[in-house]
Image (tube, rainbow, N blue to C red; front, side):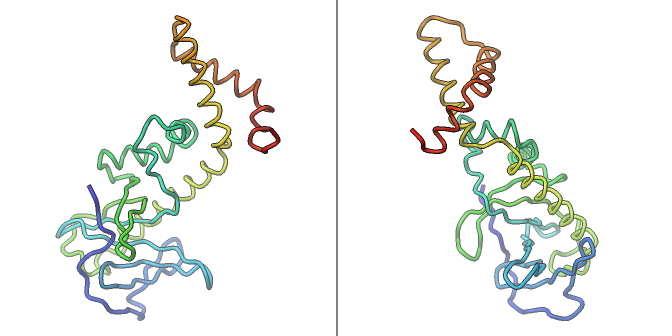
Length: 220
């Protein structure tokens, strides 16, 4: 299912103090565009941290923090990158699983359509619900502040996992070589178990590390 990052809001800029939302001591500006409500913190002259409020129904809204990375590969569990995420990025794995299951309590990873460009984008998303009306943000600022704080924490966790995890290129090479080894073993009539596959990957990681680094550095 596709979700549109936006909603049927009339366009007008809000610049008074009532248009400010406090999150972890920072002042976020609330701005309505023609298609969605934007919650934005200007980090500096060139960078900002932005969240979008997306109508879910008459009494609830999605709160979405857009990510720069494309997580479309998670739709195919056979890809090396999917396996890398499952092994080394548990936060991303949990968020994606919750997105598939439509479980938003602890946030979820979802693909939504960017109303500005008509392109699909991945977001860490949660829900503020049980509202009298979604139009007046001032009525649910406290809940909104808490949700944005949670998304910020998860964004930091996702970045840390991706940066601290082992090289994806190295992982992909190991995964590819081990798959070839498993295929060869099957052709030779050998039994290929999960433990055998794990043993081959462990061996490749420890014994073939220098060779793989040579491949990555382009020295062959």
